[in-house]
Length: 433
Image (cartoon, rainbow, N blue to C red; front, side, top):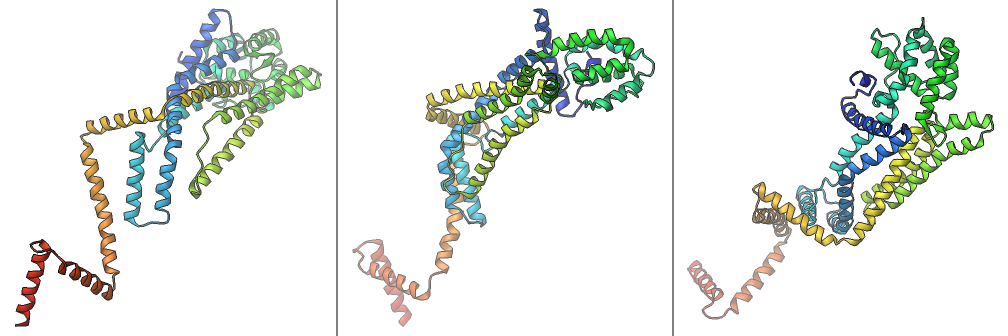
């Protein structure tokens, strides 16, 4: 198993994740082989379904947050409007506290779906690495090349011939094929990487480079073509290669099949975006308007990017993109139906209870939060009162004093105001003496 992983992606973060996913992919291919089905394209589809099924709990949490965000948006926008243009520390603190209070009210974190995205993205990128170099992770596929690789390595000067083939065919492997190393296992893996990435025309070049191995090359090509065949297409070929070679030989059916890969990829991406929850209106908030425009632009460009890229990447990757978009669309359809039926108020209450219990575990009681909020509010309000007093003119102060004296003169006998008047009269008489 260890030598199988020598040509696997060795990135510090994605490398270990890709190896784990590779074991899963290898297991799926082995199970299918046991029932007589050896097909990489079908394995990719099943593997994609399995991975998205595993990620579904994260997807559900992300979608639930999106729904709650839509419900919170009017309140958050009201707070933003209230403090729009205020850059002083007191206003910024008040805005932050009020925003936090809204999130606590709905029982969600301000980080939102970021955690889910941080978990999902490395998995999906690592999945891409597995599909980019299947033999490095799936031993059943790699074993199909064993006899041919042994024959190539037994041929004198094979390193130079393989290097020339890589240059002529412009074969790109990850990591780059290296025929100068002394380790036989590493050399064998480099040859497998090149053979797997070669298109149909490249195998003819291989026979020219190794004429003594023609029968072995033909047998290996037939086996690999069967394993890599998906609806008549070799998943190692790019749609553009299939279209150009078959158009020249007037095999227009294969031209149409190859063209369908980028077209279906584009359509499934569009469908997936259409089913995704849309952002709530921003009500004139410029930051939200900019974010909405950026999201709208991304939604337009991503399907186009998928369409263009599918012409130049192997059909296998196109199948992965299509399968992923279809699975996400199916998930999203049922999630939309689910969230239409559920009562968000119940979810909010449950989230509030969870948040309350979490705070209690941390030793934060509800009355502490309430008192802290009152103290912060008083700190914010006190400077405003002082500022109001300092801005009052001398005439305004005299008028306020006159009003106060008039009110006191009308005080009822025995009241606190009447007693205050008596003290004031006594002080005035003593001051005149």
